[in-house]
Structures are given as C-alpha cells and as structure tokens.
Image 1 (cartoon, rainbow, N blue to C red):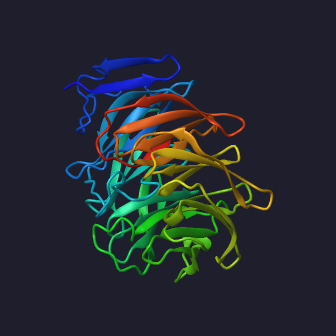
Image 2: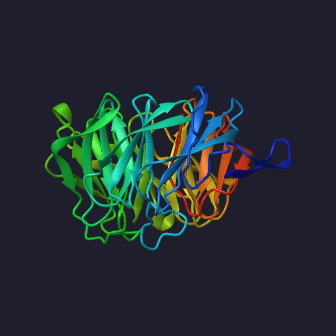
Length: 382
C-alpha cells in the first residue's frame, strides 16, 4: 500500500503531490519491513485511532521542513474524549520524548496503557506496553529518570514510573487521585488537561478543567515519592488547560474560558501565587509552547496562533493575537530543541504547519503537511 502526502511549500509557492514514501507503509499502522540506518532529527505525531493507535514519524531538515518516514503501531488503542472535535485527547503532551530523546512514550487512551519506543532518529522500535495506572491516559512528562502519566477518565489520576534501561517500571503506591467526577471517556471540558514536572523536579503539576478549574500540585520527594495529597490552587480564569514554564520557573498556563495566558509563581509548599493574565481575544486558547522567551498559543476555535511575551516581573503580554493563521481545529504544538521552529497541529483539518521562529518572536510559515487522519492530536520534536 502506498502513502500519500500533499505539501504546500510557502517558500517555493508550489503545490507538490508526493507518493510512494515506503511501499510497505501506510497511515493505518504498517511499518517498513526493515528500518534504514538512523539519521537526522525527527517529528512524531499520534493519530489516536480507536482500532489501532500509531505514531507517524517524519524527518526534519535544517530548514524546518519535514518528510514522512513511516507509521508505527503502538500496540494499544486510541480513543476520543466525549464531545471533542479536533482534539481527541483534549490534552497537551499526549506523547513525549524522554531520556534526552532516546525513548518516545505514547498514550493509548482506548486501552488504558502507554507504549515505549526506542528512538533512532526518525525510526522507532516498540519496546514495551504497560498499564497507565488509571483510565484514559492523555499526557506524559518526565524529569531525569522519573516519568508521570496523567489519566483523565473517571476520578482522574497521576501515576509515576521510573525509566530503567529503556523500560518503564511502575513505582509502588505512587498513583494519586485528582478527585474528579468524570465519565470514561471523559467529557473533554471536564477532565484533566496536562501533567508536568516543575523545572527543578520538586513538583508535579496537573490541570483540571471546568470540573474544578484548578491546578493540583504534588510535592516530589526522595526517590520520586509524591505527597499524599495535592496543593490545589484555583485558576484565575476558568478551564485551565495546558502550561509551560518561563526562564524563572514560573508556570505559564492557558485558561480557555476567555482565551487567556496566566502566570503563577510556585511556592515552597506547592501553592501557586497569581502573577498576571492577558487574553488574546481569540477563541479557545488551549495549547502553548515556548521558545526564545516567547510563548505561542493555539486557538482551536479561531484556527490561528497567538504570540505572547512577558515583563521582567513575569506578567504575560500579548504580542500578536494572530501571529500565524493555521487551520480550523488548531491544537497541540511543539518547538524544535534549538528553538528555531514551531510545529502546530490542526486536528480538525488533518493539517500540520511548520513555522520559523524569528528573533523578535514573529512566525514565518514554511510549509503545511496535509492528509493526516481526522482528528489527531499529540506531537513531539527531536
């Protein structure tokens, strides 16, 4: 079976149809019979299909363009959050590169598991599939050899693992409930949105959306021991969804109810202190990435990307409400490790956009990749 891709290259202004990437490869989940030798940087997306979840891999050129390589089955099943349209996971961080990019961990919400791949450039080898410790896993994070998984179904939970020799080992008694009252699959606006370790590794943070509109922060002790209960801080605006961190370790979060970015400092006990907020005036700002001191938010309802800066004191500032026009159903995004390129998913359109990040925080379109499965969500870049 042949795979197909349509690439719109903004630099060349041409529309090109490329066929026959790998004769034994398809978006349905088959991989090449024998992977070539690894080389270069890569981009990975999760397709979230209910029957057989898979990861699509792409090579990345020095100019930021990408080329399709193969589709790798995770061994698990995807699923869609109830009520979701463009964002089946309704989260940020559905798959994550860990251990300096040596492994890729992928959520399988339809089978309550996560899969671990060994990474060789753009080529993957499935190593392990392991239970996620809860229902409907949607987000993954890591710090050193600790890995945490966010489960959004039912009461919601976070589960901790240790990565050893490329495999995950569940830590005993290190699953914590988020105290939600959701369904499984979860209603997309009432579940949990993202899990992440603070930059210093001292805290594990989860967002809970309209069910509680709060940030739940667990202290991380010796050996990864989580505090028995979370320190809960109400969001300044409703529906906290995703977050990143600034250079001072402050939490920089999207709050979707009024398409805002808000910042918080993290106290010694895990309590959050509100610093500032700003709205982009768009619709459904849910996802955020950072590079070069700038922040880029995806607006699912507006089909565009907004750019933000920050004052010296950490108050967010709106730079451009429409820094880039994407496509209907704009969702998750990722920045290349060198901070030079931004990749934005549009799960409602089956598109993936590449942008160059300029020194002043503006974005220059590079290309659009079409014909990804509808809908899809989850992205990681090496």
